[in-house]
Image 1 (cartoon, rainbow, N blue to C red):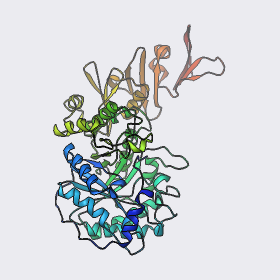
Image 2 (image 1 turned 90 degrees about the horizontal axis):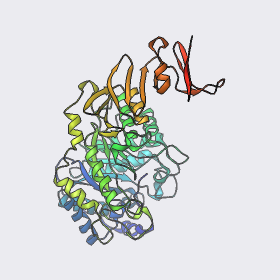
Image 3 (image 1 turned 180 degrees about the vertical axis):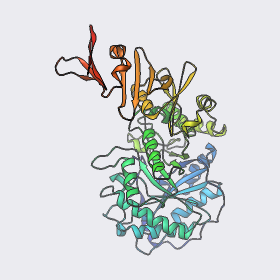
Image 4 (image 1 turned 45 degrees about the vertical axis):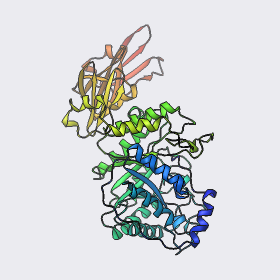
Length: 492
């Protein structure tokens, strides 16, 4: 889930000022395309003083990125129905445009009068009313802001109280898309901002949420999907190996979008960072820069926003306070020079990625993962299978074989022929895969005892209840095995 501190008591004085402030002029338009890398500033930027904003934005510019993601808080902008104050947002937009930065605006937060419950973290009571507010935002910033993100992490209770609901979110998206496009036909609508989570009492896994959005009619109401792949243990590429990792969640979401005819739409990472209360500074710098490089290797990749610029409290033990690339006093953490160097170099391709690009298999389609390490080699996942290399030899594998290889973390070698492919390991491993029999890995003594007359395996290994030996069923027989005893072949 997001690591962004939410609007609370700290913002009370700004809310009071918003109730009485007067209309301000619209920021001057600026025409430029959206760039691929930026900083997500977080809600605290809305009430930061000018001196802090200057230092925050100067840090953004110095880092070499091109864009900022800001909150357009409905709470601050319309604290009472029909009473508007645009100054907090205008100020951020002006700071950005003066420095040549593009803006991704996240239209979020619900004022008390419009919420499903009386909390800033509530979802709107009326999707239509939220949509109309989104249209007002797009009208005001037409020509200045070109990309609008609809809400933040609606798949979790934290920002969608009383509970996440993909049907309600889908209607918010439909209404917001309609109103934004009416106000600014050139505007780009970003859906999701989904958090990386599993389904629980308070969260819905992103793929499940996305599928429900489509079922509720969201297709056609967004141009881009966004996601927050927080993972404090490894960079994006490593996660390709592990089910439910942020990288695998993105692969699954894009595959589903492709199945619905939306495979041309990119996924944007609109929050990604590390709290240095939990992650060593050097590790945080390494994970950030490695993931940014690896993200460029994914065919559906879009923009990448680092969360965030400045710690809210470097000395705090709360991880929420230490996501910045600079400390509270603006002294740089190791992540800032690392990011700056990477941006200055133009985010160069990794040697492993170039190696795969120069040994591509066009039949596999576009890449859907970065290049990752697996066993004694490297792998990369594509739309129609995976590509692997070990000991200088490249091979391609169908998706079911690649999934089995990832689970065992053993790299395939040799060609996939007649439904079979070997895996490189200390012992002997072979993957058998056919649509009618499924995909199964056969190894050791069972593989040594197997011959083609037994046909393909139809089960994984199991413990035989009669003999307590390890068994495996095939189309035309069974093989039983136990340590120190020769394998027994029972033919049908």
